[in-house]
Length: 453
Image 1 (cartoon, rainbow, N blue to C red):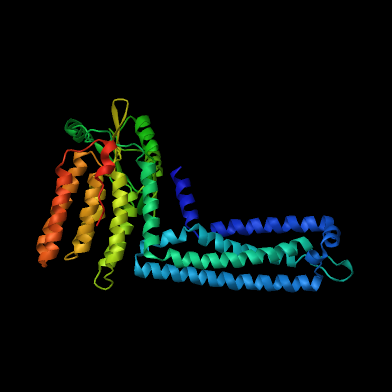
Image 2 (spheres, rainbow, N blue to C red):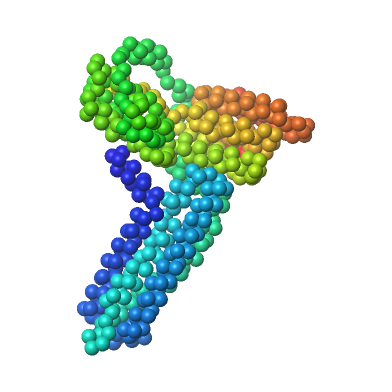
C-alpha cells in the first residue's frame, strides 16, 4: 500500500501524467466524432451548411493552422511555467517547487493544449479530396470550438501564474496542505485534562534487557510514510517488538539502521524485506504523513524574507501568521502514543511527532533571525497568545511559556529603542497572563483569542 501511495504521489507531481490522460481522451474523442461523421456526414452538411460546410482544402488549412498554433501556445505555457518555477525557487525556497508541479491548473492547461494539437492531427489525416472526398465536418467544427476554448484557458492560465507566484498564495497553499494532513493524521481532539503519557520507566527498563537486532535500510532517502498497521502485524506475527530508529521525514542511509527488532535470533531476509516494505523512502519529503515538512517550507520562506539581502518583513509576518494557524490546529489535537500495543503486549515503539517538537520547528529559527525586528517579535508573541487560548494541555502551555521566555531574552539583548522595548514588554505581560491563567473549558476558548499583532 505504501508503494502505491508513493507511486500516486509521484504521478500527481509530474508534468506528464495528467497531460497524457487528456491526450488519450482527445484521441478517443476524435475517433468517436470521425466515426459519427462517417455514419452520417451528409445529414450534418444538409441541416447546417454554414457550420459544417467546409471543403477538404479549407478543413486542412484550418486544422493545420490550429495544430501549429497549439504547439506555439504550449511552448509559451512551458516557458511561463519554468519562469514561475525559477522565480519561486530564487525568491522563496526550492522546497516549494513540488507544490507548483502538483498544480492541477498547470497540468490540465498543458494537457488541453497538447490534446487539441493531437486532436487536430488525427482529424487532419482522415480528410480526403478528389472523387472520394471525405470531410469529417462535425470533427472539424469541434476542433474550432476547442481552439476557442484553448484561448480562454490561456488567459486563465496567465492569471493563475500571476496569482500563484505571490507570497501570500504560496504560503497559504502550503499551510492549507499542512492543515489537511493534520486533520487526517490527528483526527482526535484533546479532552479537558492533561495529555501526558503514563510513566514508561518500567517498560523502558525491561526493553533494555532484550537483544535488539538492527534491520538495515534497503535504499537511501527520506522516509515519506510508514505503514503502522503493517509494522504492528509484523510484530504480532513474529511475537516481537519493532522499534523505529528514524521517524517520518528523517533521512536514512542504505545499510544503516532503519528499525530494530527484539528477537532471540537475527531476523531472516523475509522479515527484513517485509519491514522495509512498510516504509516509503524517496528522494524528497512530502506532507502527506509529515506535517513538519509543511512547517519547514514556511519557515524557509520566512528565513529568506528576513535575510539581509531580501529584508522583506511583510512576507515573514505572513509566514508567522500561517504558522499560527497550523499550530493552533495542532494545539487541540491528540498526538498518537509512541508505544503501541496488541492487547497488553507492547509491539511497536514509534518516533511520533510531538507538539513541542513542531512548535520548536516553527519558531526557533525565525526567532534567531529576528534580532532587533520588533514586528516579528510582536507577531510571534501574538501567535503564542492565540495558541495558548486554544489548548488545555499543561505540556503544550509549558512549551509556549519557554518560547515566551526566549523571545523576552532576545528582546532584552537586541532592542535598543526605549519605545520599542516598552511595546514588547506590554505584549509579554499580556501573553504571560494568558499562559499563567487557569485553562478555560473548550466552550470558552474563542473568547480569549487576541489579534496576532
